[in-house]
Amino acid sequence: VHRTKVRVVEGVLDANDTIAQANRADFDRAGVCVVNLMSAPGAGKTTLLERVLGGLGVRAGVLEGDVQGSLDADRLAALHVPVIQLNTDPGFGGECHLDANMVRSALGAMPLADIDLLVVENVGNLVCPAEFRIGEDARVMVSSVTEGEDKPLKYPLMFRQCDLVLVNKIDLLAHLDYDLDLFLHHLDAVHPGVPRMLVSARTGEGVGAWRDWLLERVAERARTAAPA
Amino acid sequence: VHRTKVRVVEGVLDANDTIAQANRADFDRAGVCVVNLMSAPGAGKTTLLERVLGGLGVRAGVLEGDVQGSLDADRLAALHVPVIQLNTDPGFGGECHLDANMVRSALGAMPLADIDLLVVENVGNLVCPAEFRIGEDARVMVSSVTEGEDKPLKYPLMFRQCDLVLVNKIDLLAHLDYDLDLFLHHLDAVHPGVPRMLVSARTGEGVGAWRDWLLERVAERARTAAPA
Image 1: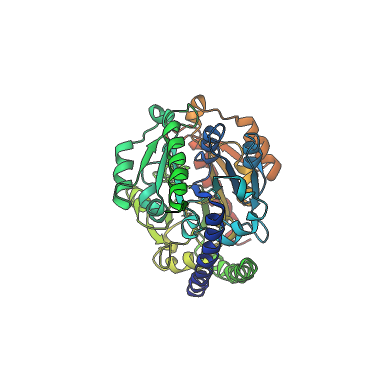
Image 2: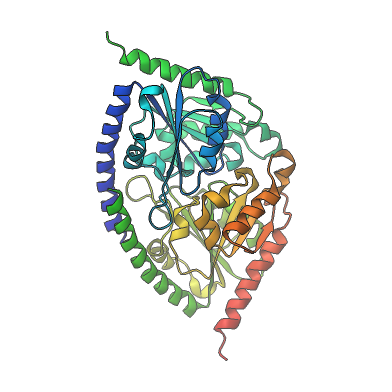
């Protein structure tokens, strides 16, 4: 059973890359910068988006991935940005990640020509979302300090494949037995030098840097797309 | 791609149930009570085990599921209980759950005849572990208050299929914008009346009830297995 399953999933990953390239072509045509936002459940992805999307200064849209429900999409729609909810629950218990095809199925409903930035909020999971490219420009992951210092060692693929790590909930550091230096040591062990930001979605600490990082990615994308 | 994948996974689930029954038969023969312990990454499964396994009064063993590494197994081995590490990382990025066959592959190394309780600590994930039975007597999930009140609505299968919910990290309640009543309301919406305990692995609050629950399950299993 196990070997068969791995072989099937490798086939799925090949097919996924092909569809991710088609997504990428659509994003290029529309000049949209796409960020794939990932984390464990409850790490604060939606709140970190709420903190920056209002008054961002560029036109943003959000694709919300969840097994079921539209709680996060409803929260973000209040910011008056286009939000598409993508539920991964068509079959048995629900897919634990977004793949390129799921994203593709939602793009028809997203006004790509009217936005500069598309944030795809993935399903809360530190394993499978890291395996499926969706045609994104960058991958951002959120790691909450409440999850412990060992997470880079336990979920190395996720920490290795991301372009930015947001270390969230730092307002709680005084109340935890959490060794931030040890976490950063583990992070550098699996992804040496990956950019990281200490933030608190609750207090707003550090979210200015996160906002600036997003704006810089949009600007970089516009520069790359411009004719020479 | 999506439809094909769902069909394949349904076939895998049928095969999984067959192997889960074989595991169950082995557990019955050895008179072992088996608990499948699940949660999101960093919710406190290992620390909650550390709190109760030392001096439990029954002979316990642990099967540790992780994508990679043996950090948790090393912690639990310090309690002088038999611990088997099961890494799910043989292929691409690592399986996001334990299934019956993975558990079966580890049973040869676990001295079932010498233990009364086997705790299987699953991979940190709120989606797929809920879909794969492993032959367990009971499923316990840990939900940390730092993850927010909305998790039962977003991951309903996990909350619906468990026999006990440990609401962990309650020592942090004073520092969070977390509405415990709202969480319990959501919990009852997806799994009315499921047993729940408020605990803090850090301070030890509530862990006595968790220990008693485990002992009661072991005693119940012994009563059921005894000849009439």
